[in-house]
Structures are given as structure tokens and as C-alpha cells.
Amino acid sequence: MTTKTIQQTARIIEIFSSIQGEGIYAGQPHLFVRFWDCNMKCHYCDTDYRGKYQEMPLSELEGRVAQLLAAEGPHEAVSLTGGEPLLWWRFLTGFLPRLKALDQRVYLETNGTLPKALAEVLQWVDVIAMDVKPISATLDRDYRKQHAEFLEVALNAPNPVELFVKIVVTPETKDEELGECFELVSSAGKHTPVILQPVTPHGPVTLRPSAEQLRRWLQQGRRHLYDVRILPQIHPMLGLR
Ligand code: SF4
Figure 1 (cartoon, rainbow, N blue to C red):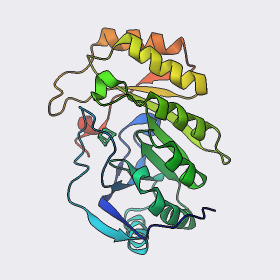
Figure 2: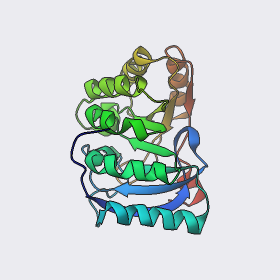
Figure 3: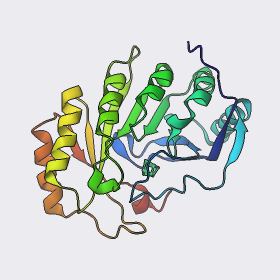
Figure 4: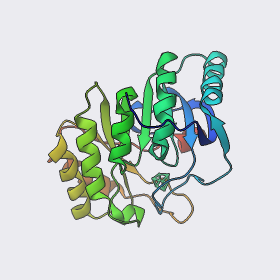
């Protein structure tokens, strides 16, 4: 149990029921809680993470989640998303025990750059969908050190936590850089599943990687790791959000 002060409110952009659109659980019904703000600035970002929000107390968010579950039926998990939900770890230390009391699985969608925050909430998390971010795709700073520390924390969790890694790839992604991402993940654990997610054209991003690039990267990844797959975002295909 954390001894740190629990934050009583968080900025919530939206709470909604939908289908998980990414990663190895794509297609499952998830209830999403979208938190405000992010510590990164990815070139391909399609989320208005500093948009309109509601400052929501713990009990109100718990009530809204319970209400939605009652109205929409059971969901596979409550997905914490953003922005970057771990920016709100002081709030999550109060909110996640309440989700557990509602008998919910906790699915954390994270950019994988805040290892200390992860350590604070890990005990309540069931699945971590972690991004590893090649700089050529994000055009942001180098987060390899933070990713390595994050993997270390996630893979040494005291409780059973499922981890998979998602790497968004673009036509500009370089083989060498992707190789470094594979090495980063494999040096922490060769069994960690890695999803190569072709970027979804949006805003300044107009092209996807070619089929030839994807085939090459898949083979490259499988030289480092046991489970590498290519999976696109399914929401644009289904007209969902
Ligand atoms: S980490 Fe996610 S939310 Fe943040 S800027 Fe990148 S894509 Fe957008």
C-alpha cells in the first residue's frame, strides 16, 4: 500500500464503452477512461489530449464507470488511456483499488516513459500495453532509457501482470532504429509480445509503410523476439473510435 498522498480529482476527457482497437486484445469490449495531457509530442498523434476535460473526483469517476457497466453490460477490462494516464498516478492509487472492488480488470495503455509512476500503481494493473517509440516515428526526444527502466519495472512486478509492447512504424522508420527497439525489448525479456502497428494516416501523416518494409521488419523482429506481429489499428476500418 502506498504511503503517498492520494490525489482526489483528475482531469478526465471522456468515459465511454467501445471496442479495443489496438494490440493483442483488439476486438474486445473495453470501457475507456481517457485522461488529460501527455508528456510526449508524437508527430502522428491523433488524440486531442489537451482538449476539453472535466475535473472529476474519485467517487464521481467510480460512479460513472459503475453506471456505464450496468447500462452496457460486462466489459473485458477498463482501459486507462490518454494522453498518458500515468501522469495521474497519484489519482490512480485511489481509483484503481475502487475498480478492483468493482471486480474489473485494469488495462493500462501507456507510452512507457514513466517507470516510477508505473511502480506506484503496478499492484492493481492486469495488462500493460506499452509503447516503444522510435524517434523517426515520433519526431520527439529519445526515450530509450525511460523505456528500458519501464520494462524492468513491468517485468519484475510482484503480482502477475501481462505486458506487451506496441511500436508504431511509419515509412520513415529505419531498420537500424527498429533493431535497437527490438534489442531493448529482448534484453528485458524475449517472450514479451511485440506488435508492429503501421501508422494510421492522419493530419501531417499521409502514408503507411509499404508491404515490403513490413515483411522485412517482421523477419528482423523475429531474430530478436519469439512473438512479433503486424497488426493495424482496427477502429478506422470499422468506423469506430
Ligand atoms: S504518447 Fe500517445 S497521446 Fe502522447 S503524444 Fe504520443 S501518441 Fe499522442
